[in-house]
Image (cartoon, rainbow, N blue to C red; front, side):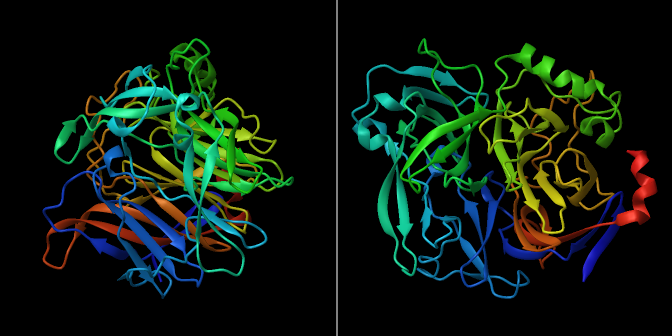
Length: 468
């Protein structure tokens, strides 16, 4: 049964009752704990949700996450038993012939025990983390690869392999000042490159395998670091054994270039940005001195057209998300367009009924929809969390008035949502809720899953289109 329904221009949306996957103790307030849920379907049809119980830190990479299983479509959940998921392909890539691969997140390495080059370039990011940066091609060969698990069709056991990242100019970081639950320290750890299939992956007609990589840095020809990070598309033509850089997107070399590229969308009253958020005189504006774009959420139409929505990386919460488009399987991309005034970790679901859903968060959990079959015109901004009418204390910056509380909005949810398509007109959203009330009336963190059903409203709403 639907918890609430709303008829908006072009689509009809229904929200199911949220189910509670896991609940923290009332005392748990640490960032990173009971956050960052990932939802997947197991090979036998059951659902699985994992979540973090560690600090949001490079020092936590490769740590195990609690996982809970549902056998009734997400209504109830139980803790996964040891070894229960060992044979699962969830979170991996499945080839058309049934072969599967996956890339476990590797733990950082003690840099003091590694044979690293003497030369490095120092980097301090917008979260005050400090790193010594090395060129991947200058590292020992065993540090230019990542762990790969492969399962042949018809088998249940995974075989360990190693995949090579053939991007010699790629930056690899040794963390020298990083945050953890006990504050900042110098861990002196090398964070290994990662092939991440969480954002999106797809196959090209000629057999190539594409996936996205975020926070990409490649050394400039003169040995310096670029001023901003970007999103990269990686391609493999040997079933995941070797990866090369296919394209880069979402990059503005400096604030002036970003301003020049995005100002037309701020000025155009018919742009998605201004139609959705109240017109150019009321719409929040970005801080144009950003670190780059990252956290890509992508989708493919299957004919070479692709969409990618990206978060602004600038050390704060209330920065806009951008969208870019490709017509050649991600080889080239349009200049990014401002789509929303805020958001992190965008995720997209392309439903069989043609509706494209965009899910993102912070503050709250937000939804956008598109029904034009192209991803060009977006409409129907809706809120999944907080409830409609409930106010979050987060103040989004507006023209000539930017909030000084860069952490506002962290009190309701981490905003790092994931989605899973479950039918031709529906999908599940996994998210964190920091204001869940337990049976004793205490406020706790919780991991929740909620179904969203969305259908085209058709001609009955045609007259409402002109209001946007």
